[in-house]
Length: 226
Ligand code: ADP
Ligand code: ADP
Image (cartoon, rainbow, N blue to C red; front, side, top):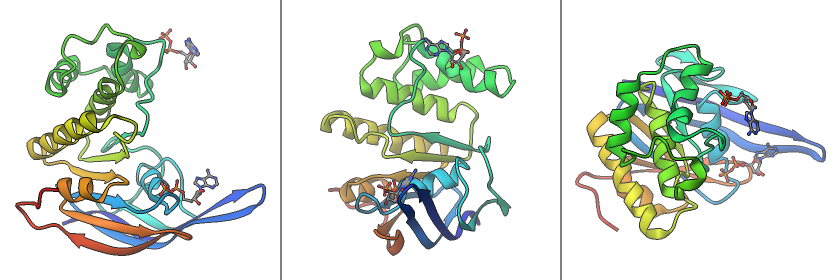
C-alpha cells in the first residue's frame, strides 16, 4: 500500500558557478490517502523534491515511482498547487480552469469544474479575471485546477505562504476538508511546524546543505491542535 515511493532521491543543479547539491539520498514511502508534510529550513530541497514528484524535472540519481512506475514528466494522476497561483492573466477564471484540458486535447468536464468551484467557495467567480481576485481566491482557483483531472495525488508547494495569517488558516481548513472528503494523498510543503502538525499524518523534516531526511514524526489522531 505504498503508492508513491521516493527512492534514494539525489539532485544536483549545474550552475554557472558550479554544482549545487540540493537533495542527498532522500527516501520516503507514502501510502494512498496519506497526508504528509515536508518541512525544513529554506534551501533544504523541499521544492526540488516536490517538483521531482510532479515530474517537472528529473533527479540526478534515484527514482520516484507512482504505483510502481517511475515518474518522468507530468502525470495525469498527480495534481500540483504552486506557491503562486500561476493563473494566466489574460484569461478569466473559467477559461483558466479549462486550459489544462485544452493543452491535453481533452474536453473539459464543465460539471466537475463547476462543482469544485462551488466546493472551494469560487461559485459565481468564473467570469472574474485573476487580478480581480484576492490571493486566497486565486489559490482556490489553482486548487480547482489541480483537482480538475481528479488525480489521486495532490502536491502543494507552500500554497498559502504569501497569504495573511487569517486567510492562511482558512485555506488550511479547506485543505483538511478536501482531504477528508476525497481521501486523496496530499503532500504539503510548509515552513510552519504547527501547520504541518495540524494537517498531517506524517511530518518529514529535511535538513539543509545538502537536503537530507532528518527525521519523520507520525502525528496521532485525533491530532494535537496548535
Ligand atoms: P526549499 O524549497 O527547501 O527552500 P529548494 O528545493 O528550493 O529548497 O532548493 C534546494 C537547494 O537547491 C538550494 O540550495 C537552492 O538554492 C538550490 N536550487 C534550487 N533550484 C535551483 C536551480 N534552478 N538552480 C540552482 N540551484 C537551485
Ligand atoms: P486564447 O485566449 O486566444 O485562447 P491562449 O490563452 O490559448 O489564447 O494563449 C495562446 C498563447 O498566446 C499562450 O501560450 C500565450 O503564450 C500567448 N498569449 C496570449 N495572450 C497573451 C498575453 N496577453 N500576454 C502574453 N502572452 C499571451
